[in-house]
Image 1: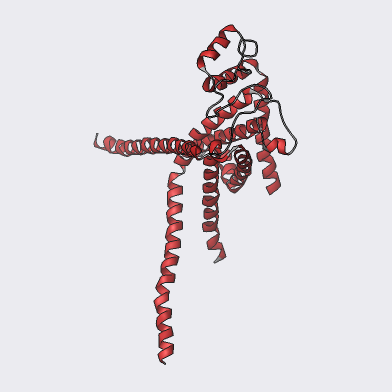
Image 2: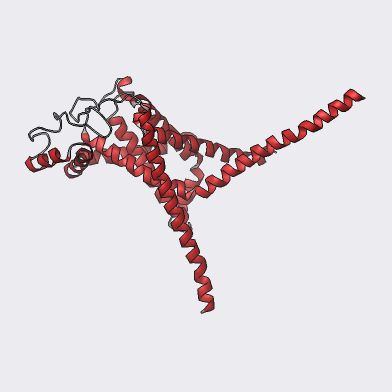
Length: 179
Length: 134
C-alpha cells in the first residue's frame, strides 16, 4: 500500500516545490514589488530550492549524463542542455547578486565594492533566465498539466466520496433512531 | 551516492560558474562590454555616447559615476557611482507590472514552443503517409 503511494507523493512534492519556485522567481524578478530585502533573501532561498530540485531529479541527471552521447533521445538531450544552461544562468544570478548585495550580505558583515560589471551581468543573466525558464516549462508542459489534473481529480474524488457517504451515514443514523 | 556528496557536487558546479565569472571580470574586453551594456540600458543614451567617444566613463567629463541622471531601470534616484546605493527600493504595488510582464514573456515562449512542436509533429506524421502513397 505504502509502495503504491510513494510515486504519487513524490510527484506531488515535485509539483509543489516547482510551483513554489516559480512563484518565488516571479516575485524575485520584481524587486519593486517586494523591496530589496525580500528580493535578496528570497533569491538566496531560491538557490537552496534549486539544490533541492536538483537532488530530487538526481537520478535523471545521472542517467541522461551517462547516455548523452549514446542512446538518449533528442528530447532528453535538449532538456539536458537547456537545464545545464538554466543552472549556469541561475548560478550567475546568485553569484552576481551576492556581489551587488545591499541588504543580505551587509547584514552578515560582508560587503563588496560596487561594480557596474556585476550589475550588468546580473541583469543579463536574469533576462536570459526568463527565456530559458520559459523553454524549460514548455518542455515540461504536458507533465505539468497532467500532474495538476490528476492531483485535482484525486482531491475532487476524495471530496465526492466524502459527500456521497454523508447521506448513507445520515440514513443509518435515522434508522438507528427509528429502531 | 550519499546526499552530502550530491550537494557538494552541485555546490562545486556553482563554484565553477562563479570562478568563470570572476575570470570574465578580469578580462578587459568582456567586462567593458557588459558594463557598457548595463550603462546603455539604464542611463541617458546621449550622455553615454559622449563618454564612449571621449574615453572611459570614469575619465570622461560628467562621468557616469557622478551624473545624478535618471538612474537605473525603474529606480527613481539612483546613481552608478562607487559607494552610492542603487536608489529607492521601497516596495510598491506598481511592481506588479514587472510580474505581469515576466508572466507574459514566459507565456509567449510556452505558446511559441507549443505551436512549433505541434507543427513539427504534424509534419512528422504526414511524412510517412506521403512516402507510402508515392
